[in-house]
Amino acid sequence: MTEYNDCVLDNGLKIIQEPAPTNVVYCGLFVDAGTRNEEDADSGLAHFCEHTSFKGTSKRKAWQIRNCLESVGGDLNAYTNKEETVYYATVGKEYFDRAAALLFDIVFRSVYPARELEKEREVIIDEIDCYNDSPAELIYDEFEEMVFRGHGLGRNILGEASRLRSYSTTDALRFTKRYYIPSNATFFVYGNVAFDHVCKLASRFTAEYGLSQVRKDVRPLPRYEREDRVASHQTHQAHVLIGNRAYSSRDKRRMPLALLNNILGGPGMNSLLNVALREKNGLVYSAESTSFCYTDSGVWSVYFGCEETDVAKCRKIVSGLLEKLTDKPLSESRLNKAKKQFTGQIRIAADNFESHALALGKIYAREGRHRNVERICDELMLLSALDLHEVACDIFRPDKLTTLVYK
Image (cartoon, rainbow, N blue to C red):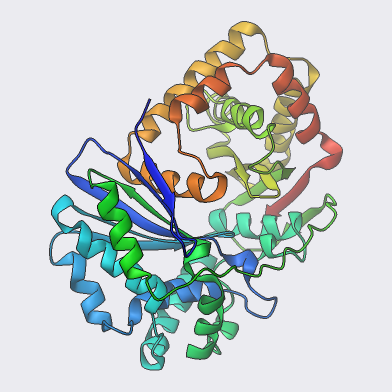
C-alpha cells in the first residue's frame, strides 16, 4: 500500500503528502471555489482572479513571481474550473521551500494591482476570442448551459469580455477574501519531502489566519429538461453533442457509467464510436464520449464532427449504439475485456506525476482520503454486467437526451 501523510492545521488548512519515485516535487494549493461560486453578475470572476493572482502580492512584484521558479528550472501554473481553482508548481527537491513560499504568497497575499489588471484583462479577452474560434470546444460550454440552465454549473468559465472590462481590484479582493482562506484550501505535495517540514512551512505561511468557515450559498439544481438546439456558427463542418445530466462524484453509479463511457467513446481506437463512425464508415475524424462528475451532479455526452450532409446518418449510428447498450447486458467476455482495457488506461495515466499530484490534492480535498489507483481498479473489476445495463437504461434513454448541433 502506498504511504502517505495527512493532517489538518488549527486554521483548517488540509495537508496531504505522498512520497514519489523522483527527485522532483509536485505541489500546489487546491482552493474549493470556482465558477459556480460566482454571483450571477460576476461571470468569469473566478478565472479572472486566477490570472491576476500572479500579478503582485504584498511581498512580490509580478516580475519576481515570474522569475522565482523559472530561474531554477521550475514551473508555476494554475487552472480554474466549475468547482475549484488550483495553483501548482513543479521544482527540483532542493527548491521545494521556495515553491511553497511562492504558492502561499500568491493564494493568500495577492493584492491585484490596478495597473497589472488592465494588462491581464486584455490577455483574458484574447483567450476568450481564441476559444470562441474553436467550435469543437465552445460546444461543450453551450451544452452545459442547456443541461444546467440558469445555474452556476452551466456558466462559462472564461466569462464575457464586456463584464471582464469592469472588474477591479475591489472585485478580485471581494471574491478571494471570501474563498481564499486556509479552511477552504488543501496543500498537496507529491515528492520526497519530510512531512513535518511540510506542515511547519504551511503553518508558518498561514500563521496570521485563525479558523474561519466559508459561507457558501448552495443553489439547488434546476429541474432537468431535455432540449434540441441547432445553432449557426458558419463552421467548415458540423459539430454535434448528444448527452444527458448524469451522476455526482458521490454517486456509486458513476463507476459503471465511467466504464460504459470508455467502451462507447474512450481514447482507444477500438471504442464503439470510433469503429462505427470512422473506421467502418469514414464519416468523422474524431468522435468521443465524456463523463464528468461534479459534487452534486454530472454530465455525460457524445461528440462528433462531420460534414453537414452526414449529420443525420451519424446521429442514427450513435442512436443504434446506445440502443444496443440498453437492449441487453454485456456478455461476461465483453465486460472482462472492457475492464482490462480501462484499468490498464487508469494505471498508465496515473504514471504521469503531475496528473497524479493534481488528483491527489483534489480527492483529498473532496473526500478526505488518499488517491488509491489500485482501489479504483478493484472497484471496477467488481462491477457486473447488470450494474452497467441499469446505468445505460437510465442515462442513454432517447427521451432524456439533449442535442446541440453547430452548423
